[in-house]
Image (cartoon, rainbow, N blue to C red):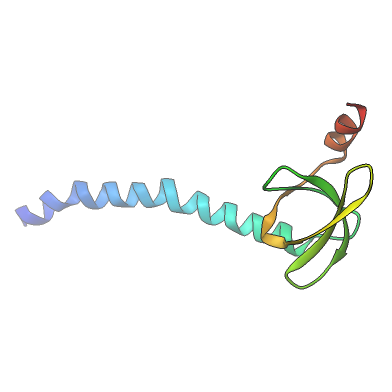
Length: 96
């Protein structure tokens, strides 16, 4: 019985560690996967490398991104997308 009481703080710390680290990561990953599945044409996105552009074509695992004043097209994996840019962020970048 004494041995079990001695292990109780360790078990509690491991449980707290799981709740603080793995649960938020699981929620973040689920939100990211949902964002990737709801992408549509003409969405403004930012890549993990910092490139902003508009989606002009969506394939299974890839997208075609149009970026820059010369409208260069880039084929990239969906996993390279950081986030969908809100309309207010797009307006701020066009003013600069």
